[in-house]
Length: 84
Length: 359
Ligand SMILES: Cc1cc2nc3c(=O)[nH]c(=O)nc-3n(C[C@H](O)[C@H](O)[C@H](O)COP(=O)(O)O)c2cc1C
Ligand code: SF4
Image (cartoon, rainbow over all chains, first blue to last red; front, side, top):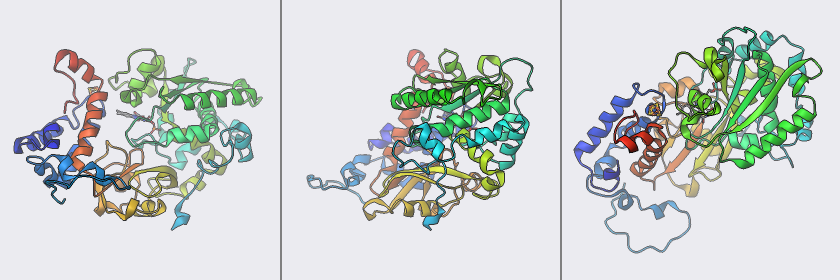
């Protein structure tokens, strides 16, 4: 997960992530195991391309956090930004 | 569209000092208790069953059914434990409810205790919320002074007392069996089920664990009747619930509405998306429920419709994320949370392996 967030993921990472979730789902001792898999599985389902982008571009470049705020921040020229 | 709200538990949150007994009494407080004490305990369970209210703590198990599944009385103690651990990311309904209207919970606890034959009820609160702890302690004190608690409740010889317990604040202690372990003074770890708490729960005695909002909804059901309750919501998800909107909407907050309302309506009620931005994804029931996107805006937010659409109604914690947010980053933070809060993660650190929630 962290590798993908940092733009250093591999195709294997995404598959492995989904695979691990598959393995946990329904098999953990309490429902926390299932709970932990839900956001991952569903996010890959709806936004797979964003996970794939994590193979080369860090999340903070794809989605600079300062764009989520409502007030103006003077930032330097956004570099390497790819539109979502 | 704005008449879709049904303020019941939230009705007088904006009164000055909404949390006092005097305010609660001005809003029909403790009338349901008076009525309940005239009823047979079984009749209360039947009324709650008939209302078809489903647990508000996440899983949606029918509350009345849970009570009737408890092992029959054998002369020994029976317990009601209120789950006030509220720790699912995004979930923020129980804490404001206990802050603004603690007596709704207390009255619900007394009625439920009478119904299931419990003389000593517990409210298990997450320890970080010291302000809520103080508020609950004060509310219990007020209720006791008014004769609603103690050895002769309402002059009817009914015994009910409440202990408010502050837990240490661990996500896993919201899971009902881990909560019971924690309440018994041990480290909160889930127990193997069966036995279910209804057979052997707190101190191995029959116990019902119910969410704050489930219990706080009971006085309304008793006072107004189960048909009143069923008049709201959908056929299989009756009644109202508090929907907590957080994140990128103009006016985040608590919206008490019938189950089955849609996210589109709720976002409208919250003044639309913040800054006119576009919705990207949202959680229907907290971060442990599969996320939804724009295409799910018209899914009725009731237990079955949300499940049919591939997620869970959970705790109605609607976290809204706009187009500027990286879904990868959001999921990575949630995953950090679950990895940290899995009790096995502590052992994993020690043994470098073991535990089911590795991610
Ligand atoms: C990991 C985990 C955490 C939970 N946290 C809470 C919580 O904070 N509050 C809560 O009411 N229920 C929580 N639950 C659900 C409880 O186990 C239980 O189902 C619920 O308290 C029953 O109440 P209800 O029938 O009124 O919904 C959690 C479950 C799991 C598996
Ligand atoms: S390791 Fe995780 S899934 Fe297993 S019992 Fe503990 S919290 Fe639940």
